[in-house]
Image (cartoon, rainbow, N blue to C red; front, top):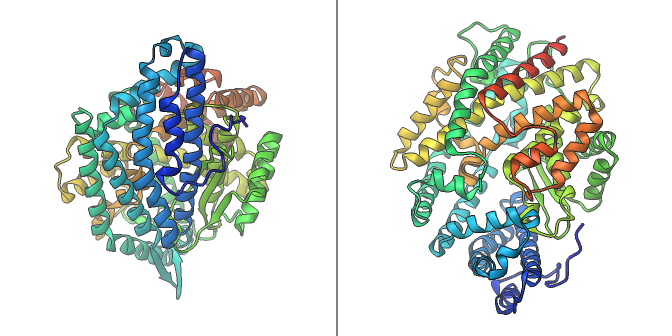
Length: 568
């Protein structure tokens, strides 16, 4: 954990912009004589941002834990709508001062090369009028969280949140699956109009944001804003095409095999069957409570590396987990780094499924990333590109998989590992669908709701062609995109999952060959944060930053080999 200079109290309570403003005033009024002075100012600037982001994190965490708690909603909106815009404007002034100072060029590139690149990009994109738009988008994002977090269905006389109801989709009883799927789909569809209105509002504001920054479209603006220095939007499109060519056929075979195990005719594989278990086979039940999930995960992580287990124990002692699903809790899962505490908070909606085990290991990988960068003094380097962040988490899924026997007997452990690898293959087409959908949405911003739904439907047919029979339920299929929270709250944050999965598969392949070397590379790469370009970070991990069709084909073959080893 890095030692702050106490330029700003790490425990400062922020209730308004006035609590932060004096520290920015000091920075903006200070005397900078040389590069050493400038370096010190950069550290102080990072400390202010760290204090803000920690409290902003808690405002979001508390709101997502209790979306129906108005006190928490109001505090989250205070940060998003009142404080963050002022901080963004003040931060822009500080960053201009840093970049325009003669000593900026004297900062050594070995240490500050990535920092310089990041700051210049932020200054290129900054527009004062976009600060207000960002706050408005944040408010709409909160509305989406509240809308989806409040959805429940009643099954067998019990009202339950969506994640708990979704467990029934794995039942071997087809009638139970169908009842649950219909109830969930109808409930989601009942708020489709509201979700469309929220998204339309976001779309309009994002298009305006891009135009203000002199971009022709929000797709290209977002690519720049994500600071993707190492690949282009066209590379992302090429990746979509490679997934269609090399992954979709294998994903289809996996789905066909599942359909055959269920004993269903070719035209009778319905949407409520996709996650179902064959008659006589129950869904995997790895744990009963969130505490059991956590304690077994701590054991697994400690077995991988003692420090990994100790990190999770430290989080447990600090009460930095909220794992179980409940009414009023936002959907999804996340690891949120706490910038002054040096540890993260893990949030998820556990309901006793194997998917929850994967999610826990995934978020645990993010958590290790937070720990491995917490001695970095610059928040700009602790915050890593999504492609690297997701490589950390997805690699941990694969590294821990061989130790999931703590949850299962031998037969179910093999089954869990096989299903995990199959899910990786099946994920790629959805990743391409979500990314391609957003390319079209923001390159064609004048579209209607119907056109948007129809285009999404075309993508479903392209990347998951014709296997599931949706007769009578096409309207549900066309609105499936509304279930993906990234499309609403984190636009264009999705292709990273696909890129990172290729990185994770490389890490796993290396781990199977030489566990010690793979772990050393994993720790080294994660420790770099974003202080080096992505290709250099991946090279430090012993892997290559390449998501070309050739690499995709090579790694798919590796997965197929692993699946063959795990046959019943």
